[in-house]
Amino acid sequence: MNLPKHARHFLRAAIKLKDVYDKHDPIPHPMGPLPQDRWAQILRTERQLHKASHYGFKHAARRCRERLGGQLQMLQQELSSCDTQLRSMPTRETPKPSLKTLYEELISLAQEFLEVDVDRVRKEIVVRTERIVLEETDLGRFEIRLSIPDVREILPFRIVALDPKTPISDDTVSHPHVQSENLCVGDGLHAINRALAEGRLCDFFLTARQILRTYNSASAYVDLEDWNGVHCGDCGDTVDSDDCNSCEQCHGQVCDHCTRRCQDCDVSLCSDCADVCEDCDQSYCRVCLQSCQECESETCHSCLENDLCQNCHTLQQEQNDAEPEDTSTDTPSPETPSEKTLPTLETSHTAIQPVCLGETAIPA
Image (cartoon, rainbow, N blue to C red; front, side):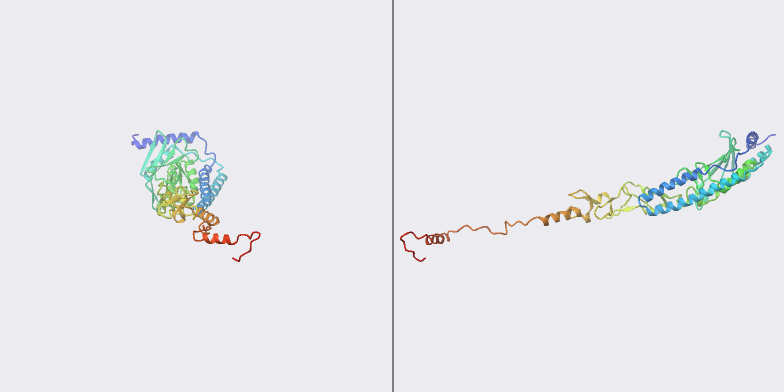
């Protein structure tokens, strides 16, 4: 039988798949892995909430609380889904697919996808999607890669971004529902496991593509509204680029809520580059502050008096008020007898000489 090249590749892949289905026992349980990625996401959001609360970023803290609440709800739903699927474990073994079924499934992929290939080095069946656009956000094309040796394992596939457009907040996320090449299948977990167990490869790839085409904000690793946002260096939140400013000194990105402005020159500053006048508690850049000559505290020009901060200026005034007045210029010094008064003094001196014995007192 003379088959086209791609058909021969599909036949070899079908033979290897058949060998895996025949040699390996059925999947031990129908539930996927525990939501460890969701838990890691919760821990990251909790750290952001702690930081925002510590620095008093009320707006960022409120957003973190809202996001954390949604993530905790998703964690509960995912754990409940795992429990439900574990309880619904089939009591009988699923029939193993035939070689013909597997080959026909691979051939039918070419009718559903633009590009289908077999990676013989990595031993993966590869289909490529069209460009995925969710709510006007272009995420690019993706590859869905199914591992042939692991086809009987739980979620034996990975999602590879061909045109990575990761959000600034997390470069491991290539799609709102893809982190580190792992797809958050959500409610589609049971359908995917069932399709792979029965050898319905085309249904598996279609289900995976449909999940990539769908956006659920409740289960997103990164919300689409934050996808093209900017990471605030102060509060750690992700905001739209229109709601962000660049610090004039370190050029870091800061959201409007965290941006501080110099009261003199109006430049934008982050919390690390903004200084505070110790008298009025207003924000200033380092250029617009001056050191008090007495205590060297950083003070704005409006609060300085005679190059002193308000505290030092008040102390100086109190010291001046407490000093005694200098009376040396106010009290006249005793006058030195002048030449005109000397005779008078001498005459007065003669007039008051005591009367001696035998002399008659003469009236002055």
